[in-house]
Length: 243
Image (cartoon, rainbow, N blue to C red; front, side, top):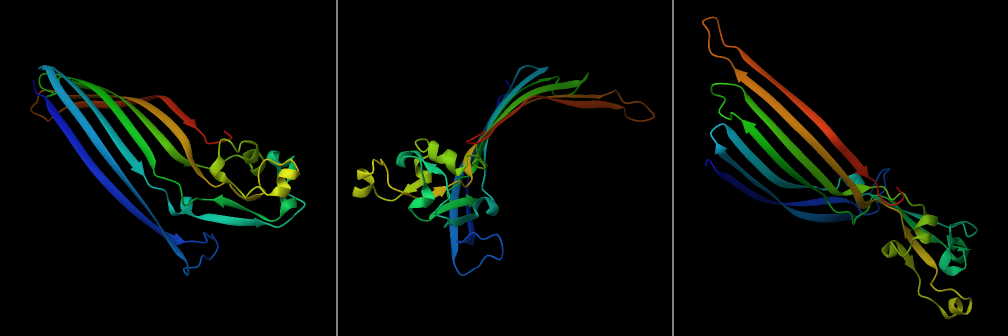
């Protein structure tokens, strides 16, 4: 009775063009890089009136938020101090700078992806047509956002200690015969990546109530009573590595 269904699908494609060097101070347009992302989002909704004075409704919607230019903008720092640098557990806790220069990627990253969100809404409406009395509605919604772009809170030393969890963020030279003879289990570190990562997550729950009552007309005008209230029982955020 009074059943209505809604389905909507949309595909978004974004292209971001920025300097390849990622400099934050006077970037050059000599070398540009284009980063492309695509996402398909949808909305599914339904409502029904099991009784003339009662309406039930529900919906599920998804969304995507593409990275900003600053979140793409990466910088490479070359460390040339051979006496400094974090220790490498796979090379006898030897400081990585002693084996030569190494590069650290900081700031944004060309590999970050759009943030994904999903919202589930359930609601009930009393006296939906508002005739003969007040119209009252109560809706619950839960939004889950995943893949949020957050800083990589691990330091270079912590990254080396947790290399098994982030193998693509530690770049090494091939293991040489001299390395094996020295008892090392991996080649020297040439690059570390401590740039941003898609690892954040947040959950938000809200309850919305609305009241609307248009009183019977009188000779001197119309009277309408209405109000709205929102309660947010849950707002949790989860950080990335190191948080």
